[in-house]
Image (cartoon, rainbow, N blue to C red; front, side, top):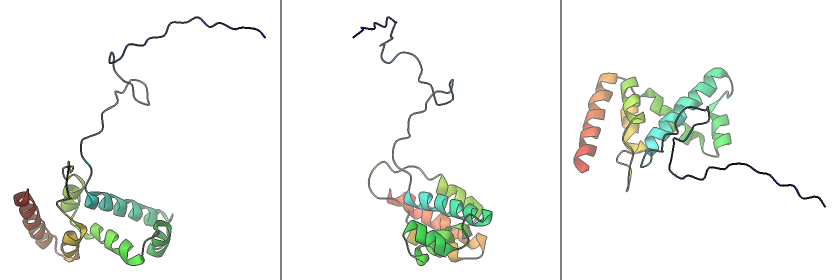
Length: 137
Protein backbone atom coordinates (compact mmCIF):
# COMPACT_ATOMS: atom_id res chain seq x y z
CA UNK A 1 0.00 0.00 0.00
CA UNK A 2 1.40 3.35 -1.02
CA UNK A 3 1.07 6.44 1.21
CA UNK A 4 0.12 9.74 -0.41
CA UNK A 5 0.88 13.01 1.33
CA UNK A 6 -0.79 16.30 0.32
CA UNK A 7 0.92 19.50 1.39
CA UNK A 8 -1.14 22.73 1.11
CA UNK A 9 -2.07 25.87 3.02
CA UNK A 10 -5.51 26.00 4.62
CA UNK A 11 -7.01 29.17 6.08
CA UNK A 12 -9.02 28.59 9.28
CA UNK A 13 -9.63 32.21 10.26
CA UNK A 14 -13.17 32.62 11.55
CA UNK A 15 -15.18 35.78 11.07
CA UNK A 16 -12.69 37.40 8.73
CA UNK A 17 -13.52 38.54 5.24
CA UNK A 18 -16.82 38.59 3.45
CA UNK A 19 -18.99 35.62 2.69
CA UNK A 20 -19.61 35.16 -0.98
CA UNK A 21 -22.92 34.37 -2.61
CA UNK A 22 -23.64 31.75 -5.22
CA UNK A 23 -22.42 34.00 -8.05
CA UNK A 24 -19.00 34.87 -6.70
CA UNK A 25 -18.68 38.46 -5.55
CA UNK A 26 -22.14 39.08 -4.08
CA UNK A 27 -22.23 39.11 -0.28
CA UNK A 28 -24.72 36.75 1.34
CA UNK A 29 -27.39 38.75 3.14
CA UNK A 30 -28.60 37.32 6.44
CA UNK A 31 -32.21 36.22 6.63
CA UNK A 32 -34.55 38.87 7.96
CA UNK A 33 -35.82 38.40 11.49
CA UNK A 34 -39.35 37.13 11.95
CA UNK A 35 -41.68 35.38 9.57
CA UNK A 36 -43.71 36.48 6.58
CA UNK A 37 -47.43 36.77 7.31
CA UNK A 38 -49.59 33.92 6.10
CA UNK A 39 -51.79 36.27 4.03
CA UNK A 40 -48.68 37.55 2.23
CA UNK A 41 -47.62 33.98 1.45
CA UNK A 42 -51.13 33.13 0.24
CA UNK A 43 -51.23 36.21 -2.01
CA UNK A 44 -47.83 35.28 -3.47
CA UNK A 45 -49.20 31.78 -4.05
CA UNK A 46 -52.28 33.22 -5.80
CA UNK A 47 -50.04 35.27 -8.08
CA UNK A 48 -47.98 32.17 -8.89
CA UNK A 49 -51.12 30.10 -9.53
CA UNK A 50 -52.42 32.82 -11.84
CA UNK A 51 -49.16 32.71 -13.82
CA UNK A 52 -49.46 28.94 -14.09
CA UNK A 53 -53.02 29.21 -15.41
CA UNK A 54 -52.17 32.00 -17.88
CA UNK A 55 -49.19 30.03 -19.23
CA UNK A 56 -51.31 26.90 -19.71
CA UNK A 57 -49.23 24.88 -17.25
CA UNK A 58 -52.45 24.34 -15.26
CA UNK A 59 -55.86 24.52 -16.93
CA UNK A 60 -58.27 24.70 -13.99
CA UNK A 61 -58.55 25.43 -10.30
CA UNK A 62 -59.50 21.78 -9.82
CA UNK A 63 -55.99 20.77 -10.94
CA UNK A 64 -54.45 23.21 -8.47
CA UNK A 65 -56.61 21.78 -5.70
CA UNK A 66 -55.64 18.23 -6.58
CA UNK A 67 -51.91 19.02 -6.71
CA UNK A 68 -52.07 21.04 -3.49
CA UNK A 69 -54.20 18.48 -1.64
CA UNK A 70 -56.80 21.12 -0.74
CA UNK A 71 -60.40 21.70 -1.73
CA UNK A 72 -61.46 23.70 -4.77
CA UNK A 73 -63.17 26.09 -2.35
CA UNK A 74 -59.84 26.74 -0.62
CA UNK A 75 -58.19 27.46 -3.98
CA UNK A 76 -61.01 29.92 -4.71
CA UNK A 77 -60.43 31.66 -1.38
CA UNK A 78 -56.75 32.03 -2.19
CA UNK A 79 -57.35 33.16 -5.77
CA UNK A 80 -59.91 35.75 -4.61
CA UNK A 81 -56.98 37.73 -3.17
CA UNK A 82 -56.18 38.68 -6.77
CA UNK A 83 -59.35 40.82 -6.75
CA UNK A 84 -57.74 43.20 -4.26
CA UNK A 85 -56.68 46.56 -5.69
CA UNK A 86 -53.06 46.42 -6.88
CA UNK A 87 -51.86 48.88 -4.22
CA UNK A 88 -53.50 46.79 -1.48
CA UNK A 89 -51.84 43.65 -2.88
CA UNK A 90 -48.50 45.43 -2.72
CA UNK A 91 -49.10 46.50 0.88
CA UNK A 92 -50.09 42.95 1.85
CA UNK A 93 -46.98 41.50 0.23
CA UNK A 94 -44.75 43.94 2.08
CA UNK A 95 -46.38 43.83 5.51
CA UNK A 96 -43.79 43.82 8.29
CA UNK A 97 -42.61 40.42 9.43
CA UNK A 98 -44.06 38.97 12.62
CA UNK A 99 -41.44 38.49 15.32
CA UNK A 100 -43.66 36.60 17.75
CA UNK A 101 -47.27 35.76 18.37
CA UNK A 102 -50.15 35.65 15.95
CA UNK A 103 -50.43 37.32 12.58
CA UNK A 104 -52.17 40.70 12.84
CA UNK A 105 -54.18 40.20 9.62
CA UNK A 106 -55.96 37.02 8.57
CA UNK A 107 -57.42 35.75 5.31
CA UNK A 108 -60.96 35.91 6.70
CA UNK A 109 -60.50 39.68 7.18
CA UNK A 110 -59.34 40.16 3.59
CA UNK A 111 -62.11 38.13 1.98
CA UNK A 112 -64.85 40.80 2.40
CA UNK A 113 -62.46 43.44 1.05
CA UNK A 114 -61.63 41.36 -2.03
CA UNK A 115 -65.34 40.71 -2.59
CA UNK A 116 -65.96 44.42 -3.20
CA UNK A 117 -65.72 45.30 -6.87
CA UNK A 118 -65.00 48.98 -6.29
CA UNK A 119 -61.34 49.61 -5.52
CA UNK A 120 -62.19 52.85 -3.72
CA UNK A 121 -64.37 51.01 -1.20
CA UNK A 122 -61.70 48.29 -0.94
CA UNK A 123 -59.16 50.96 -0.01
CA UNK A 124 -61.45 52.41 2.65
CA UNK A 125 -62.02 48.95 4.15
CA UNK A 126 -58.28 48.21 4.00
CA UNK A 127 -57.45 51.47 5.80
CA UNK A 128 -59.91 50.60 8.57
CA UNK A 129 -58.42 47.12 8.92
CA UNK A 130 -54.86 48.45 8.92
CA UNK A 131 -55.77 51.12 11.48
CA UNK A 132 -57.49 48.57 13.73
CA UNK A 133 -54.47 46.27 13.41
CA UNK A 134 -52.04 49.08 14.25
CA UNK A 135 -54.09 50.05 17.33
CA UNK A 136 -54.11 46.44 18.54
CA UNK A 137 -50.31 46.32 18.56
